[in-house]
Image (tube, rainbow, N blue to C red; front, side):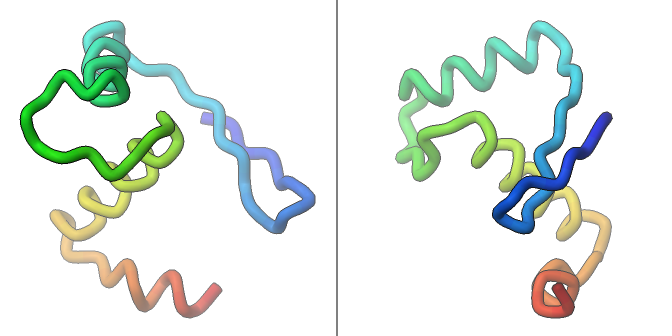
Length: 68
């Protein structure tokens, strides 16, 4: 995974995913699931996945986010 700092004080990350994960993201973006979808971009889906994984690991994501 490679990160590049942007002019918006964010890090743009490039990564590789398995083909089956790409298919899942495509289905989410195409609204092929019965649950409501709040995200309209792959980057938002990945961001939420990271947040959910942090919660699963017991990491206080809100604390990290507030520390900047």
